[in-house]
Length: 80
Image (cartoon, rainbow, N blue to C red; front, side, top):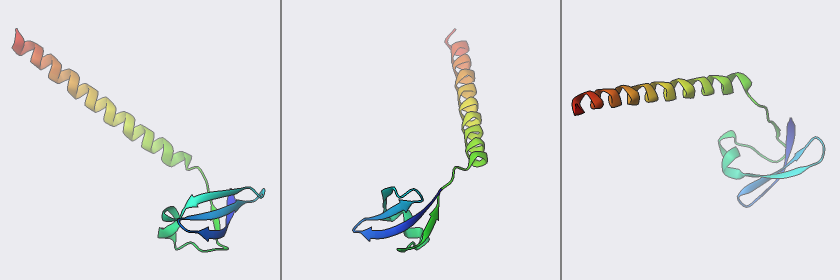
């Protein structure tokens, strides 16, 4: 989806989509891009990056739960 920065109002930019819908975006979100009125923004979903992030999160959770289970089993042995 592409949208055009229509104007800046205080702490936000008003952008207009290709179908003439207007939305306010925080200026802080676009500040690192040095965005200005008239600039075209392209908004897209990065499916591959999303899946990589999900897999990394799953892996981290799995290792944390496995570690916790192992620690619980070790604690149970010492309690006997």
